Amino acid sequence: MITKRLNEENLASISESIPVPEYERSGLSTGIVHVGVGNFHRSHEAFYTDQLLGMGEKEWGICGICLLDRDLKMYNTLADQDGLYSLIVKHSDGYQEVRIIGSIVEYLYAPSDPDAVITAMADPGVKIISLTITEGGYNFDPSTGQFLFSKADIQWDLQYPDQPKTIFGYLTAGFALRKHNALPGLSVLSCDNMQKNGDVCKQMVMTYIREAKPDLAVWVEEHVSFPNSMVDRITPVSSQEEIEELKKEFQIEDAWPVVCEPFVQWIIEDDFAQGRPPWEKVGVQFVDEVEPYEKMKIRLLNAGHSLLGFIGSLFAYSTIDECIRDPEITGFLSAFMDQEVSPLLGSLEGIDLDGYKQSLIQRFANPYIGDQLTRICSESSSKIPKFLLPGIEEQLKRGGPVKLSALVLATWCRYLEVAGSAGYDYEVQDAMKEELVEKAKASMNADPLAFLKIQTIFGQLSHSGPFIETYLPLIDSLRKHGPAECIKDVLKANRSPGQRI
Image (cartoon, rainbow, N blue to C red):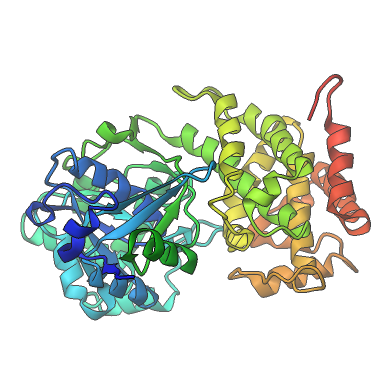
């Protein structure tokens, strides 16, 4: 079998088997610099932009930036493939759509050439710097919201501003060069999965700039916008299986394809300093205020993911779709969404909330995505304070129900307690792993609230009498009777007369 390496030279022959970009990539100009090229960016923003370029837009090519040393493999892969990659969209009925995405037209590895990255950010044609740097990349203390100046890389950037290592050092240097060259500002578009991502980004960037280069702060305030956005597309880790399948089915050698679900959503506040791509042509929704949509997605999809990850691991499942095939777990998820999340969401223009929740169940059930619970449960110490705890706090203030949310936290505690023991051969992947496991196990003995007393995660939740009265019987039930019996008891107790779950 003769295979073809994925690159620009081979596009014409590859087009005989799967769709490839029909636009002339060499004729595109770069309008977007994107920092943090990973699977999600390639299934989302780069996908949307590829569609737009196919409609004749020529000013919105993407310059991808690999910011960190550990990004070298991704950089080498895409550099060897001229920025091209395969997008594999897996439908729940087994149908697969495969196409080549060509919107990443430049690619830079920041650790080896910081000057090139700063120059790219200050290019007159660039109107947007977009980011997928994960929540941790915004460098704030989750318990206080304060910028962490003590980090070694931040101290490096303050001392060596021409050789930055962090996004804050690069943005500061790029803004300064734009100001020096009398260029207009631009927009910094966070595509990370957190509420008010643009507001958080602006707060952290401005805090850094006021310390690093105070004379630049006024220019940035006047010339740079930070729109909030909500992003959504389930994009699991790529596997060797997809690489081999492309070789077998299409005779294509792609070292790092992207797998994703059919569903894709992007809602953005229409606040751009120097214009933007007409992404609305390809399904992006522009709104005045994105917060209600963020709240919906984070508390339903993301909190729902965590719920499935913890409880599914206790059932010894390994993927999200396995969890959804268990009617007890699906009943737990549905009750959680209906009873403890939906009442807090209010009205959402253009959204059928019941239809949205039903679509989540369908998306989670897709057996061809194979989203691993280990991925879902990773870094939960940074996810739970954003995905779940705000809803608990709201319900406690209004005297509403928290039993199902408390059960989610109880399953997390139990997930940590049994990790690595017989029947639970998963490994906890979290920056706070040692403390999490230590406190979870401590709660089995002398102090039943040891886990909830981790203030950097739970704040003052351990001091809430109503919550503790709900939580303690649940964690006790999980330990004594197991997850299946515990869920049955909770759903039975929560069921309204005549209600079916």
